[in-house]
Image 1 (cartoon, helix red, strand yellow):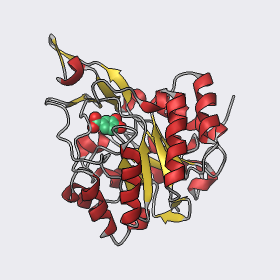
Image 2 (cartoon, rainbow, N blue to C red; image 1 turned 120 degrees about the vertical axis):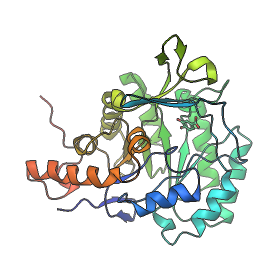
Image 3 (cartoon, protein in one colour; image 1 turned 90 degrees about the horizontal axis):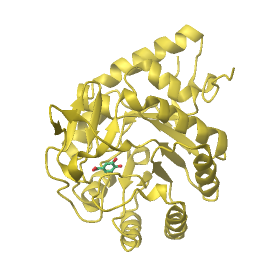
Image 4 (cartoon, protein in one colour; image 1 turned 60 degrees about the vertical axis):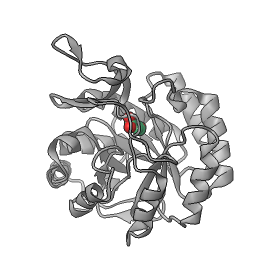
Length: 306
Ligand code: DHB
């Protein structure tokens, strides 16, 4: 059975990796992903300057789900570029980045070019946790302006990390914007922004008076819907990374059935550690065997309609 997958011209041994934010802040954490069965990694979303992030507590596991308002703590773009450009597999790696304002964008990309980074850039348009800042990809005009600016500056392999959309008209509008650009991939979905979870009489996290991004199995229906909505609408050159709600191999299988080429794991990875990839891969293979599928291409995007 073959669970290899491909994004652009790069082949991966399997379709699993971490989601940005989990096991990816430091070199030591990323080395644990490399040592695991995951095919590759994405870095913590990097900003131009390092950031301490929001006050703690800022992440809580709540049953199988999670809430976070990290506030983009990261070691700064230079740290991740140094690490990636010394990685013998840099072509397979994903660098997540986020501009903090429009002025950052040219500098971010000129640094990426200076380092001659050959991997994938995941431009994060969906962080819900910076006090006072909206999620960029909920503003269609701003998204278009950023993509115009980015593709003027950068011709490497680039994708965007999107927030969940909840309306068919928004799928249509966002897909028609994305289809105007030579994007390599999209990643759907980021956490469901601005939920609250309560413990006794209190919010579970401190920043933003308790409002944070929700991850885990409770978001899977919207993750699958966004993956499939974009699979139906995007030009075939733009591949889809499915993220959201994976707890077992069946969930990975469903992401692929909805059209994902690669699947990322966030909350579960935080809870179980990088050894969880071994179980997910075995369960994915078991699920494929049940249906007699030999490769991911046998069922990618082939969810049936009643
Ligand atoms: C953070 C959270 C996100 O969902 C994201 O996409 C980027 C950063 C954070 O709070 O650090």
